[in-house]
Length: 171
Image (cartoon, rainbow, N blue to C red; front, side, top):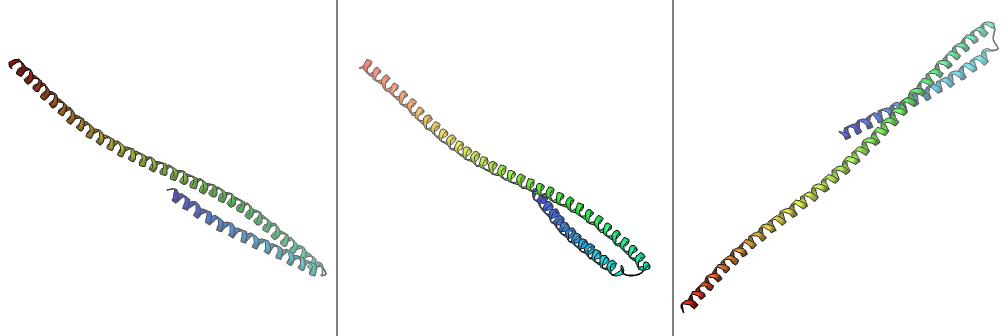
């Protein structure tokens, strides 16, 4: 699940990087066109300045057109700059998300490792407990046998003592 989110974030990050690069190229292209158009308009204005009043009016119209193009290009540039800034912010947010996911993954790995260690310790303790129970059972059996032997000895000793007493009283 975390890997899917991480892959998705990385995919989105790559797409955003491509889009940022594309917008950067587009902005450079527009700036280049803008500069070229300004140079063209200036050179045309300079060459036509020596002409007649019709040419003067035409120059004014062309200048107005050129200024409109400059304004439009500037607006496009500003719009692209804003969009680029927004994409950079989105990319930074995705980067933070990726970092957070990696941190969560590392935390989960630590928890899994700790759980495995606890399971191993539990298994060792369980084995030790079973061994101790087995030893205790064996010891109880030994003690039971010894008790039975002690009882048998005591009974035989009593029988022998009674026989001696009977023998002493009869003899």
